[in-house]
Image (tube, rainbow, N blue to C red; front, side, top):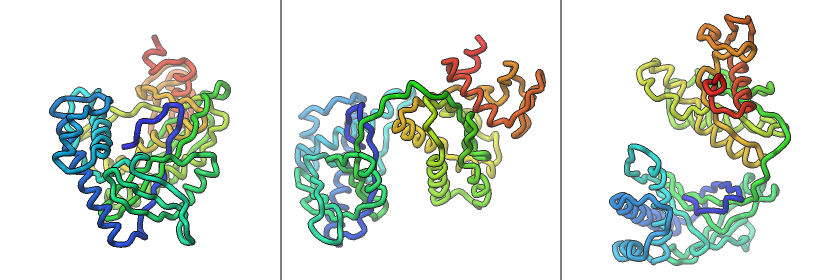
Length: 360
């Protein structure tokens, strides 16, 4: 979990795998991560028992319980207690709360624990020095990646906080970069975007991205981790081709609860294919792009957007047949996804959440 940061700043991370560590340092870091994981789960259980979902720092008696139980420093216990509270905050607004079971081995190291310097040598670029306060005193030599270089060239500032973690047996380090958030645009177009795994991302201004991923999804024999990773990478490459220069507001579908109550509706084969359309990943990437370009991102109700005729203002389930849209009332024809994108644009221009409010 990242530290609480200024809302006026944008934050991005760049991951570097520590493949060049000697066995002694790697063993030391793994031991440290296992201990932090145990302390973190202890604080999660403790705050869950108290039903404490606040964001306030843990009180000293609670911090000292972790110190005496695990033999760690007060500063490290306080940092892990804060991280546990940030994990529990995900359950704060949920009606049916469930205690999180933290399976990841990650820890956020603030400037009390780490110092980042230029490496004094020939083979590495950065030296990440763990300076104690509960963390092991080791120096981690790190190579600079292309993404790190692009961030620095684009005016991002390297933060003093890093995130240390372990994926299986591979150790990694997340560098955090900060940049001032631009002001939201006042000039430009309001654009709608419809997304599905068959036609990709369809924008009302004529842009289309990610359409080639449909054929690749059909080739997957089954759902696996590497297939999801491939589609996620393909979506990232597709979004890089989108031009945000003339957009001031982007309206997308709010599909968070779209699968609620649909269990058993689709076949197993179709469910496997639909699972590869990573809508949450699309939204997360769009939020980052819109934040960087000063574009306002709005989520709209998807109800009837693919069956509503923007020409005559009437909807009918007979209007859409597959990818073809033809209004049974006025005869207006269009591609179904392009028509839905225009309807989302209409909702953005009207300043309402859904078509039902627009009709009222």
